[in-house]
Length: 291
Ligand code: C2E
Ligand code: MG
Ligand code: MG
Ligand code: MG
Image (cartoon, rainbow, N blue to C red; front, top):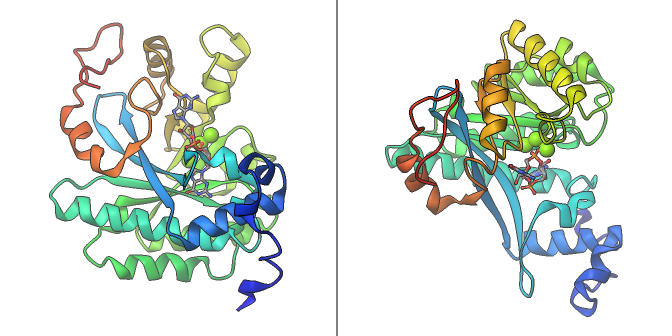
């Protein structure tokens, strides 16, 4: 359709990668080409509970570059949210993540898989169709094993519409998380108005939570409000045992970060889950052994 509308004016291979990544059009070409050539890959990062259970995994996109190897989304951020690409990428990621979740479920180790959905794709008129189509494609997959993480790319101007969409996701049995909580334009409004099962506290608040009383105050307030609203709270960017201690003590019930595991390839996930054993609790906390 609108596929070749002025795209090929950009010949990526004729540019150095660094040069390409400096322009929006270059980044877009990089991502578009990777999508066409099937060089987008999902890695999966475990999420664990404060009680030491594995809650699920978050699907995180990477781009396999012929010369540079795996590129993280930071290398093509602006393109992920391009009006013409947000939906194609979202469809690719939904398909790949739900397929993987169905395979894990069939293999006897069901795992919840969280998928990052940009608000641009969420607000696309075809988002619900896309989600339904992918769920129908993997009919054995229990929908409650699927969670969408709403990442604010475009502001959610139309709050009633966003509410309607998230309610519709719940009707399909899919769970909803608000990602990067605290960084958007209207976080408290989102908490108040959007029906979500979980919120994810952005790692920028977690990083210095041990030493910075302001960060601790914010994290504590967010945890308290969310728990009172009956939501799960996931701390992102949990890197140390001290993070775990403090966050669990503050009431955070789910944790995600390098302390437990970096994002790993799909084939490594079952073994990671099988070997994850929180050590006996010391200081109100949990420590991973085999990772
Ligand atoms: P996010 O959804 O908030 O994902 C968490 C990011 O934090 C991931 O970065 C993860 O690798 C990183 N991370 C996890 N634990 C730690 C830690 O302990 N320390 C530090 N410093 N970082 C940690 P990643 O994979 O580079 O993804 C970055 C962002 O790109 C994601 O943030 C998300 O907003 C976006 N993204 C990733 N995959 C997708 C996707 O499939 N679709 C869309 N639309 N966006 C995606
Ligand atoms: Mg996320
Ligand atoms: Mg996040
Ligand atoms: Mg984040």
